[in-house]
Structure formats: C-alpha cells, structure tokens
Length: 209
Image (cartoon, rainbow, N blue to C red; front, top):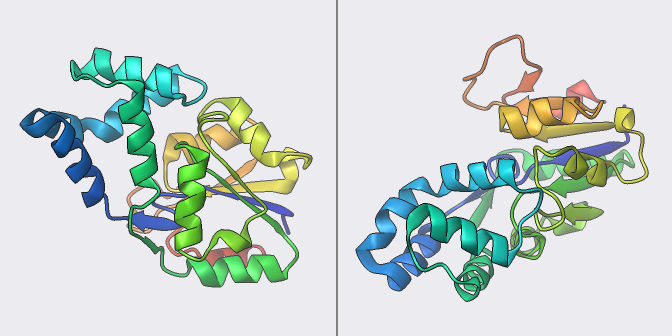
C-alpha cells in the first residue's frame, strides 16, 4: 500500500458551478468578457506550461496580452477571492474513499494549479478539508513542472506516493516523470485502455487495500 496519496482537485474531488465567475467578468468587461470566458481553460493551461507558479502580476500581464482586456492585479485578486465561493459538489465516492485511506493511516494531500488559499476554502466549504494534511497550490508551483510534484511528496520518497487526477498530462504523465505512480480518474472511460485508470474513486479501495 502507498503511504502518501496526492489528489488533483477540480474534476477529481470537486465539481464546481462557475456561474459566479461568469457574472464577475461580465460585470467587469460586459460582452467583451464572453470570448475570454469561453477560453479560460485553454488560457490557463498555456499559462501553467509557461510559468512555474501563479502570481497576481504575472497572470495580470499574461491575460492582458492574450485578451486585450484591462486585467490589472486588483481584478486578479478579486477573481481569486470569488473562486473561493464557487459552489462545489464532491465527486461520487470521494468522501468514502478519503475516509478509507485516512483510516488506513495514509497521508493525503491536494495538489492544485489554482491559488492555494482559494482552493483550501472550497475544500472547507465542501467539508473535505479535514482529510488532508496539506493543500499545495499553484502559487507555490504549477503542474506539470517537476517542482510541484516534488513539493507534494514532501519528505516521502516519490515511490511511496501515488497521484490521482483527471488530466492526462498534469495528473498522469507529469507525476511519472518524477518516479511517482499515477492513476487517471477517467469516469467517462474516454482514454486508451493502456493507461492505468479508474472510473470511480472507490476503486482505489480495492487497488490499495
């Protein structure tokens, strides 16, 4: 059995309702916000590959350059603050699985690419925070950079750790480059059968019993 379990957050442990985010940017930029809202995932993905960590100034300059919108640091700060309030539902079997691993004496942590304080608050609101020893945010280091995975292993040998997440590059290939095991959370069974994956989080109970 592995001794440290590293979980991705969005799409793995929580499903968020991002309507509040849409309302925030529409209030700031009006209809000009619509193209940006449609491209948030791809924009942030590109940022995460080009920058080793999130910070207000760098993200502000990046988004201003990519969108032409007046993203100042204050808007970024307000954005981060409202993401902490995003209504979130836990993924099916998340609590059951975390409870099982915790009872086994495992160390559980979250590695997320968004700002850590915001994501910690979301876990708290979902009543899942108590299961985790630490939440490592993208303001420390972003996936898929190796530093992020090594931060999450902390004092554990990478071979004692396993990463669970829903993104092939960030959560499956990235950890393997650091000698960590990884399991793809593929609940729609969309990815190739050669990958080590699960459709339900509680399959971890059988895999690591």
